[in-house]
Image 1 (cartoon, rainbow over the protein chains, first blue to last red):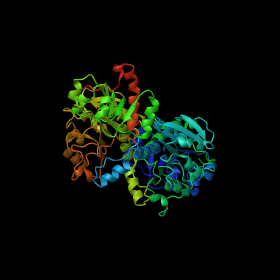
Image 2: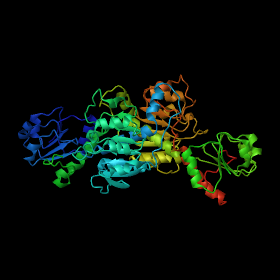
Image 3: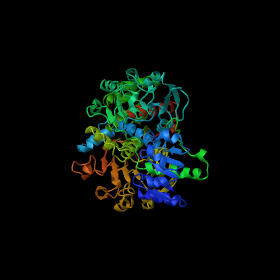
Image 4: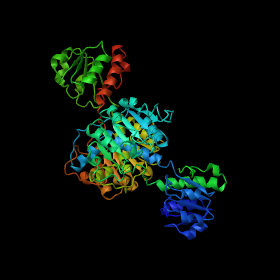
Length: 314
Length: 314
């Protein structure tokens, strides 16, 4: 039996039942120990399983987590079992890249001004819209998400410079540089985009020196983690107009404190960590589930995608 | 002598002088008959030449118009001369396509909501952002501009259906339909985008029947001409939520009248005919000029791009 510890939208349930007619599904609104005891496969958002459940699910062989993070899972207990754990990492790639493109194009094509003029019923054609074509972007973290951003930027005729620790070539990057050499490519960049995770190496990677090297009309986008740059450094760069504009979806402290100076900066967009949101999130997750249950039933566990390394915790 | 009837930005003038060192340039702030009398080539926005100038420019052989429209030119007089007239049509393709993508992605990725929440210092993550990937777009007018929109949409994983009079295959369209058959593809469309010019055939091409056939969450974008749809038809479709959202850059009457109901519709963006604006407009125009003066000097007039058909008026 496949036990969903949540109750998906009717159309998505219908699709599962039709796609996998040989399977037995139980959909729940909250996790129940009685049903867990019967389950062979558990589908969960990854926030409801706890240590005490571990001894009460003797038949479970696969836990499918419809989330990219697994930090709330009882990982230490799971390590002692043979249970396969897989998740949906990579699912954020498309919506995040689309959000980054939306913010870039929105600024370049004067959307904020258009929206304000409309509110005031003003037919004002005096707005300076830029072209994205032929500009240059530095992408900090050219992995799966950064690569998708690079692919889309290249379609718009943008030159992409990837930046990672090693400088090793990455997909959809016209050129590469390292964290150490980043400062040398910044004067050429119209866009500086980060999707870097939070690690010891990326913490406060960007300093005031970096911002001083950027063009005065450069746009900085942080869609990775807030620890990339100290808030005071970013505030200073924006207040002194060292760069033209910033869009941040992530912050050192989230929610962004009510009294943060970032809220009122005219050359900054505060996005409340929503860039990966998608109304198709569950649909995309279930597509992965449907693809992988085939491997699971065929005993081809090595082919199951996004297996979680319980030791490493990701 | 090459006579500019306007005075471009210093960096653009500098670039012209450096690129064409063998040429003599005169830059003016307004058209002067004295200089016109000496000019061999005239570079103009196309709004300052009148009938009386025609007899006062005996040496002019080429008029380069840094605009796509030539309706303010003394066409009837020019027809009687051997003067070559060329313009910069096609220059709007890139900024217009970028504007269309900005508005689509802006709506899909919740930019208007993000901007409003920021004004109110609200960290509100409850917004429904959609993914553009895997949606379907109908493009009315799949020519140069429509094709560029199609190319970008395809890069985002969108299926493109081109719609023109004949249904003849066009670039970057996965499928084609005709004006007559348009209504049959509309139920499948998430996006309906028009860049059609104003002709007898396109006037009021879209009727209330078309809007009723569209999805309730479809987005309609008019970046061609306002005569495509009667304002009252559009207002009714939006007020009755027959479609989800509209973005118009063009209107039946421009400027949009102060009392138009369109201003206050919550599911509509009014854009004041600015989608082709670009801070790089003159730079792009001069690139065309620099490319073509080579042909002109070599006597290869047949190679000069965007020659205006003075008889036809475009």
